[in-house]
Image 1 (spheres, rainbow, N blue to C red):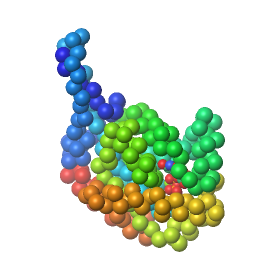
Image 2: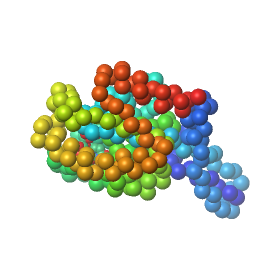
Image 3: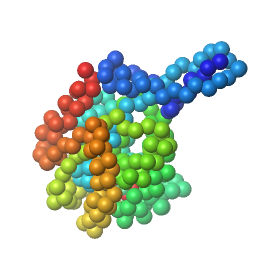
Length: 231
Ligand code: UDP
Ligand code: MG
């Protein structure tokens, strides 16, 4: 019999029918021949993926919280997943810690597997992946391992001076929120993240948002992007 296998396991839609869930319902199905069973496995939903890009302190996490509240996405912060690995003393913890201290990028395999696990363990089908991909290599690894491209890409565009000010004021006790590491993070952002943004700017997926202003002002520019998807 024909058997259907979805790309990511338990991702079942809970949302009402909408353009967003229709796109999310585009099944990625492989059909394989099996002589054992006449009962087809129920088709599973392919998730709706938003990448959220922007330099350190550009407001990615803050705006993600608002999108979660209003549009029911699940927020996956790549940086938070990595910090959780450090805190849990996992095998990769010390390598991740020294990479973050230097403002460098953790190997794609590690980050993508953490994101994959997080998506698979959620029963939501709409994800905000915050702070990833940070390089073309990150982007390619995601496409290869997850087998998907994002549906939407947000880029919070913020001047360097403003980002430095915000990071130094946020007091979250992070090992990388000091002036020396911030400078390195900005250098890495310029070198490796711009190619990713340029890649998506050639598609219709990229939404560039001026990230200067109050949280609510900026969300006014974000809201219509997701509101249009729900129509
Ligand atoms: N990081 C990484 N890969 C990722 C996300 C984060 O290597 O996909 C590391 C990187 O060292 C980065 C740090 O985690 O500087 C903090 O990332 P986060 O997104 O939390 O902070 P941001 O720089 O956006 O303020
Ligand atoms: Mg963040």
